Image (cartoon, rainbow, N blue to C red; front, side, top):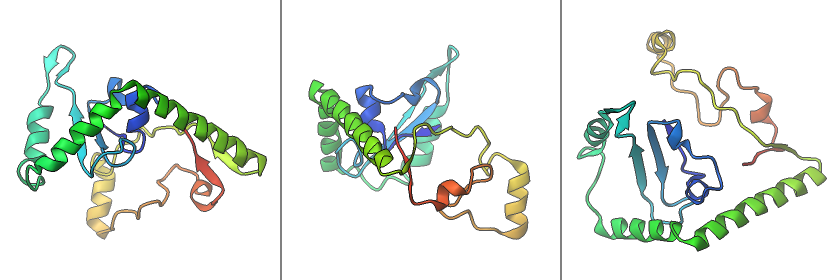
Length: 169
């Protein structure tokens, strides 16, 4: 699974690596880099290894009707407009310019001696829900989940303490 909310505009234009080859489920929002209304999209693989998957039923059960408020036709129409814009050649030019701006920004930061990180490794560790040892620990001590932005085990703490580290594409 991948959440590409912050890079979906670049993925759509082919300017960032696509997670669709590697992931069975991909989520995104339309109001960040797709310049649309506040909404979300869930993509899932229908066929894997020549066999149909059950992702459609599982996603529909999780979202409809419990988490979806209503049809909101105005939002659906706005998402359609945003996706039509993303499919245009002008969007590709826009995404290319975004990448150029990021590179120029990174070079300017390096000139003033700020550290930039160019590649971020994706952790292959299982989540808390998948690792029985951590499940038991959370039940035993009733620990709340780690606050947003706090480092996970195995990630250097320095990355979360220094204000001069920037993550770039």
